[in-house]
Image (cartoon, rainbow over the protein chains, first blue to last red):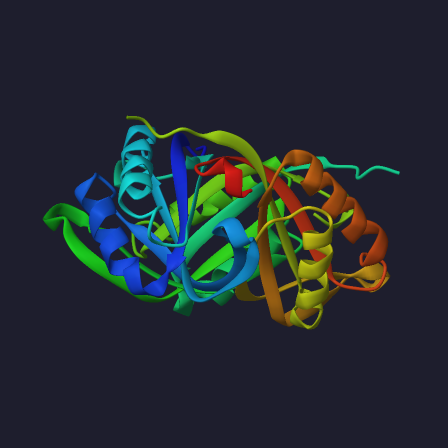
Length: 102
Length: 102
Length: 102
């Protein structure tokens, strides 16, 4: 018996904890079947002033899904949140077991 | 001097915190040399009813190892835990430094 | 409208929490624009004795950056910390939105 893998996309979103529930609800509506969240903090840049901008009270959300679903969620986040919220979003290719769940 | 990378597999397991010690012990026995754990929470599907199934008190375990070891661990998790426990398992390819450790 | 991705490198560093500030400062100086940190714990090997070496009070730092910046940071970590500190460092390829930020 061997492990049987399927390719899926892992979408990682880092954002303010205050919008976690909205992001997760959006992702479910666009086809995600589940998510994993961990508490995070960090720092980045802020606009023209390029100052260091602390981000405590952040959350790191991982969504394992089909590539087309990841694209739809990423596009939605870009159009709905990027202008207003601090948000980092990246995708990577992974191999999953139990692909029927994702 | 340049950084010298070796390809390894990053195996990520998300499961109930109550079985973390068993999963880590299994992984060690199958060849893993170390692991990293972070507290996590999330939600997924549950069987035929497709209800939203909250998963608090979860843990996200990362194991960096050779591809064959990752396969052995993934197969073991599939046969030993998938029927009974909520568990997500995925693999990705990464480049590591200090490959002698993994 | 479609999501527009750019390839970047995700550098993950797992180390003692006591050196987080130094590692982040080094990464910024070498070109990183931001980072995400999560609390972590784990275990690995320790030198010749191969004993199990608990690592509580650890931190998992993620830095999203250009490949050349990731290489520079990885090399710096290798030469500055590996001999003295418990540190795991790995790189993966990801697709990002808002590439101007990374």
